Image 1: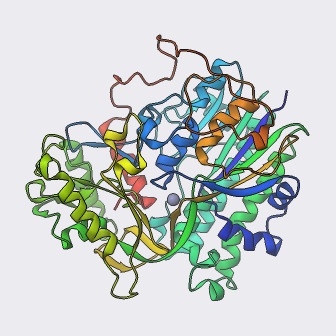
Image 2: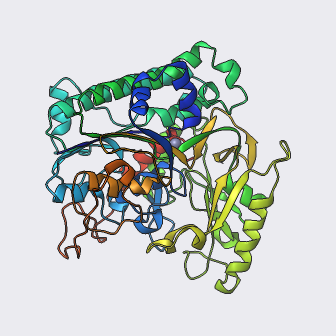
Length: 528
Ligand SMILES: [Zn+2]
């Protein structure tokens, strides 16, 4: 029975990989391309890992799994918590494979915390609270430690290494090296059907150092020749060695997939969406009530604030201003990338002021301003595409999606600024929808139709002959698996499935853990 090896490079983009391939820096990826197929893999809207990886896991769009941002709002409040596996409101292929008796190994796949109870092994990826079980089985972390291949969580907080590329790169190479060794051990010590590993050093590095590796950055030509340029390429070479090592552990009839969750573009100008909305007259900050983070409630917040006062971190961590809801008509609802804005609607939002009768009028005005404003420094429009919610989202959780969705123009990020619009500082790259895929295996042929990230879940199930319990939005990529198809079980069982969210659990993480995770998210540039 063929197996599937999936290697994900978070944020990989052909614009960056092609020149590295030409230089001969990625021989193992080249070998995979030579015996397989290479294409662009289209991501989700919004184009960031927190919406994209759940789409990979479920085979449906964000409107059907309900994860739009790194934070989710408690309905009817302004309280927000970091998203976890339990935030994904649709069944994942991880559980379908397990139900079918297939053994899956998942190394650093984002959003698999808390790990579902499956047949297989998980070292959860994404942003994790300390002192919580992040593995399945629960003692896997200890087992890896004892085997001399300890797993290290989190790390690579690129924003905390502002203008210290050497220190950042040293950490990225060290942590990634450890995870490669642990993943090799997992492959060698598991009778796996699916081995899925995700590598985040590409994304983190490209956020901070695209100016050394992204040909679309104006400083690339000179930077690429520097010592730091060479060290940035080491991040890719290390992961390419990993590809060689993992592929050497496959058999001839195995399907090997190399993917990214989204692509990347260089950035020279950045935006702060709430400040921009303020400038346009749609939002007011409450000057008197400056709080520490976006989760603006509770005594824990005050304690965290005190700790930060004591540690003197205020100069390093910018404090977002809280919004004066009674004077705000529109606000940012995808905080991690600025790609989503919503209308402060009466009857829906906790302090909504816009009359539902005026919703369309207000939304049109906000969209018009966002779509047409011009950056005076460049003469260009920072927003490349803008959509109404219903143009993008039709699924069952569409009602919790932002009212307005945007894609940034080339060289723009819709987040990471301290003012409404400014030159990029330390950040030099951000996401775009065009990700990558390479596939090699006995049935792999050229793509008839462009592949999408949401096609991976049904394709993996088809390749491993495991039935699905949900209808996917994505299609089986027959170009990769031949005649194999995914069978659907008629009706999903009414009984609770282990690990499956039932919708009535308590919040997955405590307030203290949410604070801790939030701090790490800030380091990753997802929060200000
Ligand atoms: Zn990213």
